[in-house]
Length: 155
Image (cartoon, rainbow, N blue to C red; front, side, top):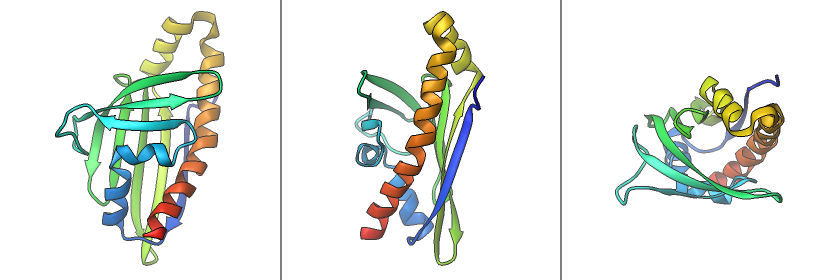
């Protein structure tokens, strides 16, 4: 089976609290990610708090689909993370104060429930589907981080 975890980091010339406010607003994700084209909070009062739910719309040349995610970590200035589909995949951002700005790390982990879920959903094709999702994460994270940097540093 393929490696089921990936993360990448970069320096952004913005303070950790301002960066957290930017990345914890999931409605911004569509302007940064090469695959996730939109996110929205499920509740009208939704926001970056543990337990909040949001949906996302993803697009590739082959298909379009929506996901449902729940915020699992909301630690202002430090970490924001969510799990997709009731614990199939965990995505997140960690922020460290660094050299007058911030080091932003985006991470992705395909969780055991996701492996089982893909087995149920795709049967013998599960491994291939997991590889496709892994490649998308490994390509998308650096692209997303670079786009966040451009947005944050543009003010």
